[in-house]
Length: 328
Image 1: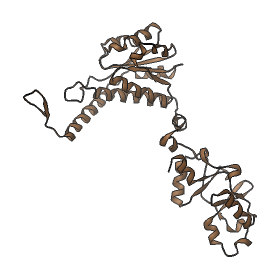
Image 2 (image 1 turned 60 degrees about the horizontal axis):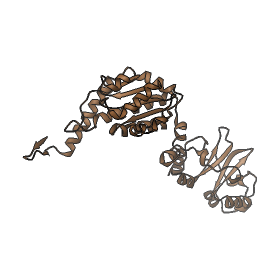
Image 3 (image 1 turned 60 degrees about the vertical axis):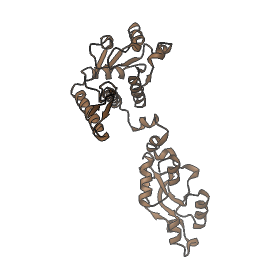
Image 4 (image 1 turned 120 degrees about the vertical axis):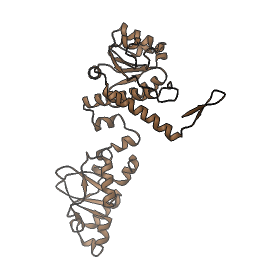
């Protein structure tokens, strides 16, 4: 609720949380409408983008442009090559970025954004497929488009009904729907997603054990018949505080610092097989690094050997490797 003062200014009588709920309810209702009224051209747009030789070019002015940049980024990161082109820059040379192999998404709530005129003309001149996202099905943009994804005629969530709020939420959600539909149609899986997200926490969460494990000459390997004196030398040289007892290429046991302490009496007269713990916890190289970290935390161990399905030793992952990769 608001009240007008003598100077014409509006005073807020609702609490901030009441306003927040009103905004969220308004946008939720609009999303419900878009679900019910989803354009029957949506499938055709997905098919168009799936069969493109080039990229999806996204453009819009003002808040629509900000949302368009996000849509382009989401498309690109989920397997659909895409790029945002600012309409102002397009009119000053960047139209050269839009080729005959591309398709274009133009975003305008009213469908009458003047800054889009040059891009519209460019797509018509060179027969470049163009998709309109707009609330106004009778607009210039919709009339020129090959496909129109119409937004519901829902009110903006602000008190004056003018600030882009509901409309931008709807546009962003529609962009997400397009991206996910294309993602699933392409069979774009976690491995493919990791290729496009190698950095930061997300990239770390999708790393596999094989990407960071130690292998070959780095591994502390002894045979079951190795004297414990030599075994201690191997453990010391490799610096992991553990040794793999390997027979015919297969991991048959491990020796840890704890095993050494439990067998101090007569240790130097023992062979590796006498001290080793059989059937140790292991992991496969293709498992996510975060899962390996979970096992190490659960077992309270600092190192984990990676083996294949035949229990052949492939590598070793240390908790410090997880820390360096940004997982822990």
